[in-house]
Length: 106
Image (cartoon, rainbow, N blue to C red; front, side, top):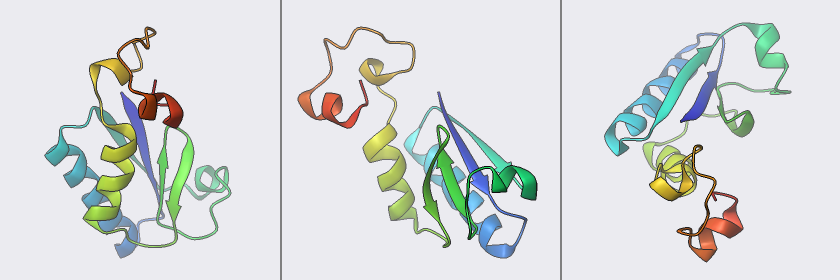
C-alpha cells in the first residue's frame, strides 16, 4: 500500500488537491492511504516552501500548485500502480519488466 500525503494548511487549493488525489485513487483502484497534513510543523519537515504539496511514500513529488487529474494520474498510475509484481509485499522480482526494474518499482 502506498502512502500519499497532501500537505497544506486548509486553503482552497489544498482542499482541491486532496479531492483530486482521492478521486484518482478511487477511479484507478490504487491501493493507497491518502492523508491530509495541515500542521505547519509537520509540513516544514518536508522542506516545502509552497503548498499544496503531494508526498508519495515520503518523497515530495509536487508542490506549489493544484495539479490536474491527468498530472495526478501520471504520478500515481504510471509510477505507482499496484500490481502483484510491484507490491510492497513481493520480494521476488522475476515477474517485473525491465522498465519496472529501472524505475525502482520492483
